[in-house]
Amino acid sequence: MEEVHSECVWSKAMTHEELAPYLQEESAELIDAIETGDRAGLREELGDVLWQVLFHSAVAPDFTLDDVAGDLVDKMVRRHPHVFADETAETPERVLELWNAAKATEKRDRTSVLDGVSHAMPALALAQKVLGKGEQVGVGLELVEATAAYEALEADAEEPLLPASEEELGDTVLVLVALARARGWDAERALRGRVRAFETDIRDAEA
Image 1 (spheres, rainbow, N blue to C red):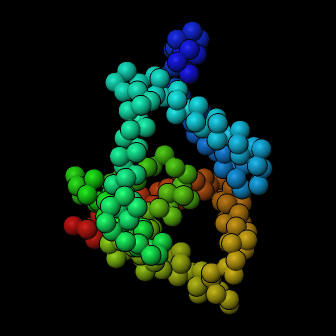
Image 2: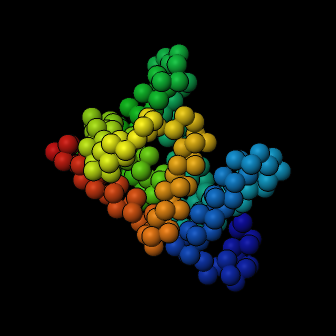
């Protein structure tokens, strides 16, 4: 990477902002390889994502790859006190508790569970993340159930609203997107807007 960055005119001209779309694209291709079970593709795409890490480290004027790796090691040691310290964890749930406790200590300046949530992720992933954050402060499904959309669906539903499987859930989401498209609506924008409103509900509950 050092040689490429010093000798390649294109690479030398790149900034973090200009590289960001490539990281997003390579990450998406890695997920595709995982979801399709493409083992050879998985190996290749992991390399492509690693290249992006190396590239950003080379572009940065104020830190090196060694700094990135060192910070990562320090963080993983802090967040695994059951491995590197005296805590014990016999279940995955306990591991998660220790992880979140260590993270909270690191992020003392955060005033909301929403601090640090990236709005660059797709709307559906963002919705799942924000709903999970809401549950941490006691704001959950009841707010969704109180919406006019939920009440209208429940009033018309002869069967339970929740699909019986992830496959059925995928069908349901796809149908909603298709209906939105037929009406000229942007499903991504619609969900993102609703998530922003839910974030306001969460911050109100925290106040």
